[in-house]
Length: 129
Figure 1 (cartoon, one colour):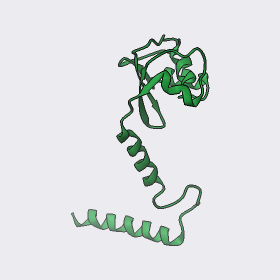
Figure 2 (cartoon, one colour; figure 1 turned 30 degrees about the horizontal axis):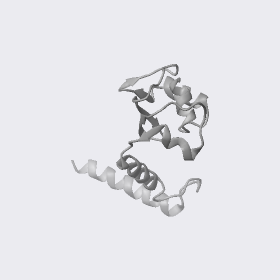
Figure 3 (cartoon, helix red, strand yellow; figure 1 turned 180 degrees about the vertical axis):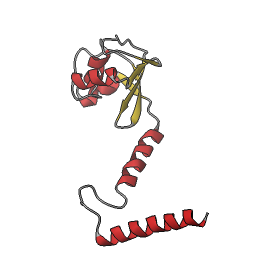
């Protein structure tokens, strides 16, 4: 089975086209090698797939006959992705949402003053040298 179809069958990609694009961009590796979308997958292969800044590590157990339900995915693969990868993604997401929520618009007057104070303090640092 092709790697793009396999990723679609085990529900890592929503469409086959997304799987194909991931392969073309170099986000998919089979046995430590970047692969094309037409690369055949066999039981025992180790796949590393980058999605949403997480490197998913998958070991192929069997080839599904077609797209399988979410409950049956574990029959065809073993997910060996380390927990640290998911924790790192959560930290990145939290750091982005720390101060302002997305879509809140322009800085407030108070925000603008604090930015100006920061930049003025930075200028003073360079003048002292």
